[in-house]
Image (tube, rainbow, N blue to C red; front, side, top):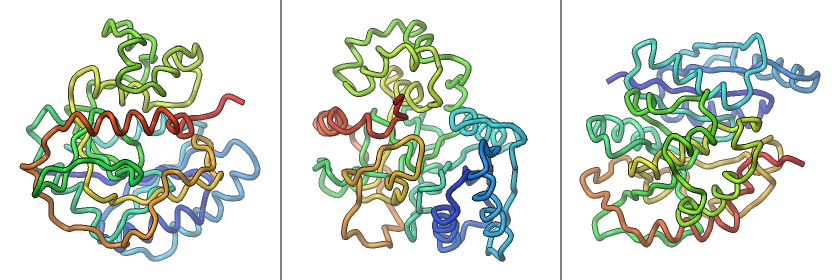
Length: 293
């Protein structure tokens, strides 16, 4: 099965260098890199440094696309995945410039994509597992099933991505599925808040992940997480445009090397875990979405 690794970059050269180094450590052999068009002189200067980093000798092939117009995050995510699937990839792993892949981390994605490729109850694989939530795992299990999706290093399959239409606004998704904000409150109060915001509903905010996250809930499909994060998010330092500066999602004192094999046949859904992530994200989830201020 062909799995493409996609990396989205913009204006953070040192963050990007760390991500590239992590991919090299994982012996990824080819990476599709997309750089969005710079919107100001600061981004143009940063991208000169980015290009120098990409031109350095790396132990993998880099397929580089530099956008000639500003796409923004939502359009960048959607077009890069559409490009991969139109070109013949059956699945893809997508990282942004703050998603460092831990040593052995590729095995979670590549093995999971292969093992679960025909299981349509699974929509995504997510590499970041929130360390602040005391998730419950059955004995002998090292995988977590949730309806709540996480964007920080994730993967999906071509056939499941077809359900997502970037041109459909959050409002049209709710209307099409006849879903009320009240029902979403029980699943994700933070997302319900966004569903009451006209700018989010009408697609005026540069975000793609709310409809994709809600698709898991609305279609009763799952995102699968590892027992320990295979992704470290290094972008919660105030340098990004979509997340507030915060340390509540930090992974502390965790080893850089993670498991290389998982029990893919033991990923039972435990409703208590949905409660745990709901309660945590009710307090902190809005920190991971763009501020309108």
